Length: 311
Image 1: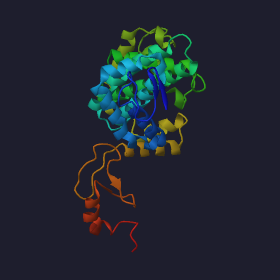
Image 2: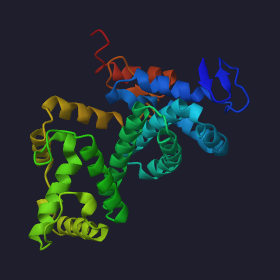
Image 3: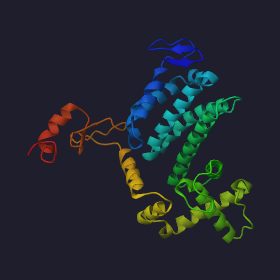
């Protein structure tokens, strides 16, 4: 049973004023919560089902989300869309990422208005801030991957630094810490700007003019493009992350997550998955199949390497 602005939703009984496919929120959230962080992408099919429904009936859903009594459902929807965005980000599918981001921005805009209303619990406000921060990180990753530096890059960097400052992440602005990625990035840009002739650059990024920060970001990108040999190698990047406080176990987990984002191919017919986890793994975990027929047809060839077959 779920409480909404239009009444109680119980089973298939949906009162007027509640979208007919309201149940998709619960199904998507249950799927998201059932997975560990490194396997959450395997709920992609459910997340996308909710997203497709939101697109098909956008006006009805946005009106539903805008009611203060539906703030919990609005928040849950934002988490599901965030996870779908993360899947596309992890796969570098930036066109799909952009489409989901458009809907997510609309939901987050409504959610921001709801949590800023008088009397709203501080927990809702902090949850919104955390979600917004993670979404901004995904957008910054997209720009970095696509080699884009623009005024939005400046605004994103300021938002990310402000969040880390607001919640006092890590152990101080003068110390490098894994939870202070963007504070550390800003410190390095500040030092670089002063070396390049900028006078008395404020440690408070909000006091730095957007055009000055954009000039610095653009200069850095142009220098890296001109001298690719200065870009960190994979090993240097790994050592850098370890110096920020991450562990080898953290890095191994990160690599596993990246691997899980890949869409796999059927070992028999070579059909690619349309969403993560669509194909079923053989018990040995070495190959996947799109259906039982392909698994049976491929068995004679695969049994030589299958660890589940008794030799």
